[in-house]
Image (cartoon, rainbow, N blue to C red; front, side, top):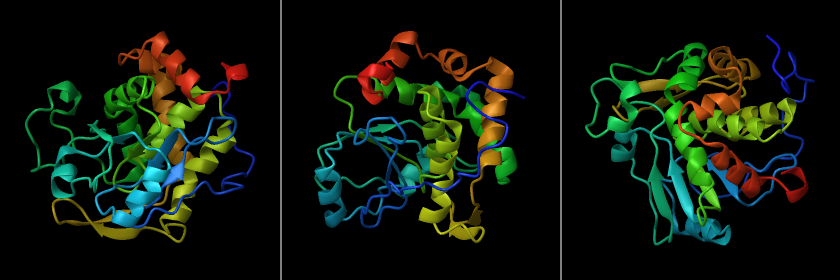
Amino acid sequence: MTRPGIPEQSENRLTSPQSRALDVPNVRNFRDAGISALKGGLLFRSGSLNRLTDTGVERIRGLGIRTVIDLRSGAENNVWPGQKHGLDVAWIALPALPDRAGLRRRGLSDFSEFDGKDWPLDPVKLYPFMAVYAAPAIARLIKELGRPGVAPVVVQCAVGKDRTGLAMAIIQTLLGVAWQDVVADFVQSNIELALAAGPASFVDEAGVTRYSHPVSEELLRSAIDTITMEHGNLAAYLQAHGVTPQDISALQALLLPRHMQ
């Protein structure tokens, strides 16, 4: 399947030529998502801030972060609430996936697509699933990014790999970043999270031992293919979930240099 701007095979540039990782103590996978020609210092990505320390606060304060957008589920946020430690930031919860079975919470009326759905454990199935069921959260994320005064912003999930990874890849691709650069940023999570050698175990919000799997270009492609097969392109996908041309223009104004808008 041919997609404009996305070659059928990347050019073997699957690791970032220069890491954009930032040292924020006790926060995993914290990076500037302003890769390639995108403006830096405005959109950051990370794992959960639930273990943020006073030292980490000073680092985030130095970045001028105004907003945290949390893609974790309601149950995750209940078990591991985000820590502000005096940070003057707005905290916006946009669950990208449903609470796992047995941990459903009330008040998800804006996410009715989640009814009866559980996350696939197999990443091969998870990424097409996210392309469908995380769409409302990703669309709302883009609308939020275009609002005045929101940026600089950090987008987080549990470890900043899957939900955040897909959301950042969609935004970067939408803004014209070359596919090989999008992939390089996406798979950088394997290095930041020490997953290059294979899956790592963790305990989830229900106390169940699970495994965090490495990400790959193939996983990202499967999500993008799911989107393009249903909607044709990313702009149509987002517009189907409430993103307007004005929202996309605002995103471009935020992250693209003036000569590229």
